Length: 112
Image (tube, rainbow, N blue to C red; front, side):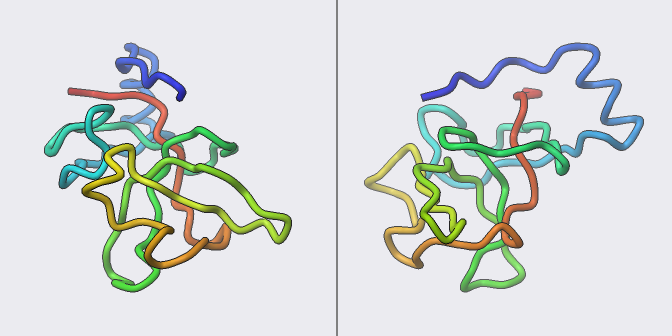
C-alpha cells in the first residue's frame, strides 16, 4: 500500500497555479489512510497505477464523487476501485470496475 505524503510547499503552490486541485474526503471508506474531512491534493493529469488513490465519478450516483484505491486494472483497461476500510466502503465490489473516463485524478498529497 503506497503512503500518501503531506503536501510540500511546491504542491501547495501548484494549487494556485491550477495544476493541483483540493478535494475534501467524506466518509469512512478510506480509513485509516484518509479520515472524514481530510483535505487532499489531486493531480488531474497524473498517470495512475495499481495502488494509487484516485478521485472518481461515482458510477451510479452520477453527480457524486468517490475516493478509492486502484486495486487492479483488468485486460480491458477497467479499474477496480476499493476503499481501504473494506467493512465500510461502497466500491467496485458493489458497482463493478470503471473505465478511465470515470477517473478524475490521482491523489498526490494530504493538505490537512
